[in-house]
Length: 184
Image 1: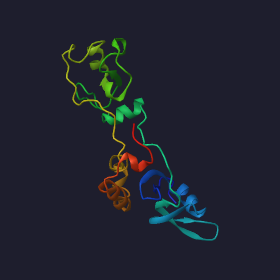
Image 2: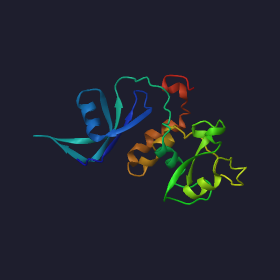
Image 3: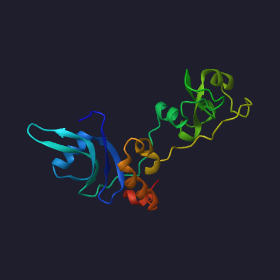
């Protein structure tokens, strides 16, 4: 079994919950906590048996969980901005985080106030707002979506068998109430 093989985990109501290793998915199935809905191509070899690798599993019991919230971290802000300076558009290189409204002027450390900037643009902007520095943002900073279609999209090209489960949940009009709690 490939170490990098992943499995989609669905709640009892078929809501996409997360992605785990195929090994973890196999253990959940083996212990009766989940059932296999789709199988992967590579088999798992035991001491005397060969098992199909789970690719999509569904938990046997409903799991209540809070509405997922993206973690605010340097890596996640860079990912949201596609590793691109939000002032000049330069990709990669020596990127930094910039507070659109500077912290010393009351700007919060929040998704809506953080952007990726190259060192040159961050230095040029300094402790001013983009308007004061006569700089324009390429896109307005916002909290990334936690909708299943967005969260699991990077996996759909490699794991095509997941598509019916992610797409059907997306088309079903699922809301935050489907996650077991109200969104805040």
